[in-house]
Length: 81
Image (tube, rainbow, N blue to C red; front, side):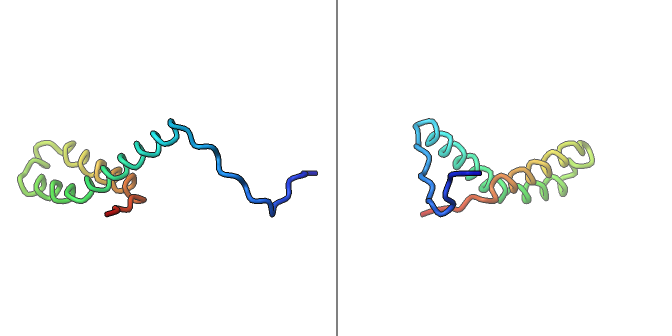
C-alpha cells in the first residue's frame, strides 16, 4: 500500500547547469534538423535531374535517408521570433 496521495502536486526537479546545457543542445539540434529538412528535397531533385543518381545511387539513397532523419528530428521544433 502506498502512502503517496495522488492529488499532491509534484515539485519540479531541480534544474542544473548540465540540464540547461543539454536542453540548449537538444533545441539547437532540433532547429538545425528542421531548417535542413526544408532545402533537402530541392537537393534531391537536383541530383535526380543532373544524372548523379544513375552514376552513384548511394548518394540519392543517402540524401533521402538524411531528409527523413532531419524531418523526424526537427518535427517538434517551433521557431520563435
